[in-house]
Image 1 (tube, rainbow, N blue to C red):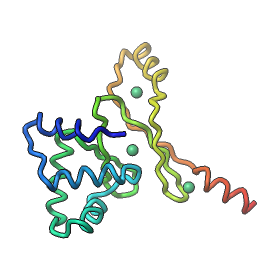
Image 2: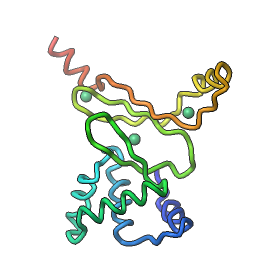
Image 3: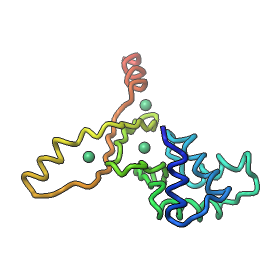
Length: 150
Ligand SMILES: [Zn+2]
Ligand SMILES: [Zn+2]
Ligand SMILES: [Zn+2]
């Protein structure tokens, strides 16, 4: 669960007001968290209940929230820039499992990189501060479908 009040306090602490538009954009990203929305998709999500918000406004506020570290970009190598809420406490990014068949994106919350990070520290003297890891393959549903086809 994302503590929405913490996000709002974070914004205020950085000297920015929680405008109605920013609130709506943050809420849309939380609501569609698993979908990793593009700016156009965020606009579509908010336009229904807030027809006065234009795409340019969404762009501007998404960029600001990104610059402030409140949201993060995600590149799934599909030609789109997507966004998701950044973790409130700075921890390493979660991993994404990407199904090459149905394009579903599964979130892996566990870090699971500890042993690799230790090897980097030991063998290369390198301290990992973050990582962005994508795994490509078939989700459970697509595997079943392939099995049934034989
Ligand atoms: Zn890590
Ligand atoms: Zn799939
Ligand atoms: Zn994600």
